[in-house]
Image (cartoon, rainbow, N blue to C red; front, side, top):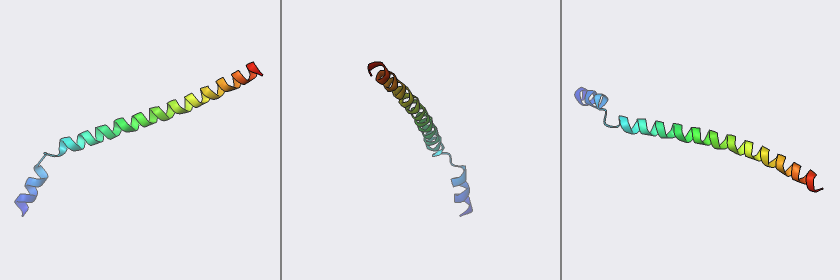
Length: 58
């Protein structure tokens, strides 16, 4: 039992999979942060354009 537990602890077969999952999760988190920032900026710019157009054509 001790030998099989030691072999299991020393095995590195799934380590690459864990690395890829962590890397992909980080990329997704950064993408969400960028898109959220862009959405906020875009909405602010849109509101400014609407206000300008309303004042220009009114």
